[in-house]
Image (cartoon, one colour):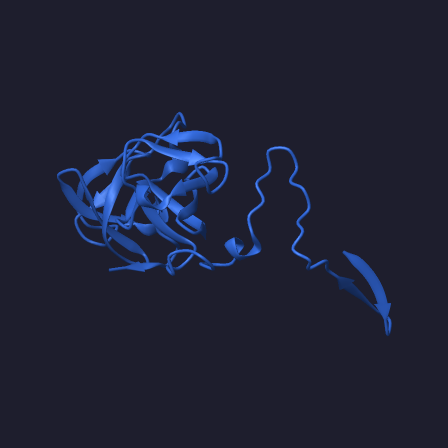
Length: 186
């Protein structure tokens, strides 16, 4: 990139010859289009939540089987957030903020949530009540521990109706990871 002065304004001149700077050690260079929402992906909204189809999902450094596996998810149904797409690869982020690339067929559009994962591992883990109706004053059907996965039936922006094992009920949406604040899910 070169800088030039024109009429008191600095102009940036980019080299558009197709050459790209070499990647730093361990860095993956993704074409610019891959960073644009759905430039070469599914056509679905990015970001969005999905879930893992399998108990073993390899997470790679970049969008290719040639890229190193950086870790393996081992929990089917775990919600992850798709934050980018490149061809058949999805860059996903987990509830702890770690991200990497997963092949699209290992993901499901089935909506699931984690019960307050930010509380997991704390000495005083607080169970989250699963209510009979979408009211804090309603009867409690079950107590859910942090890290439990639930299937989303629907969300109204404040409460989500979940199915967790043999229980169905409502949890306040701000206690869940896998749905956005104020998001409505049908």
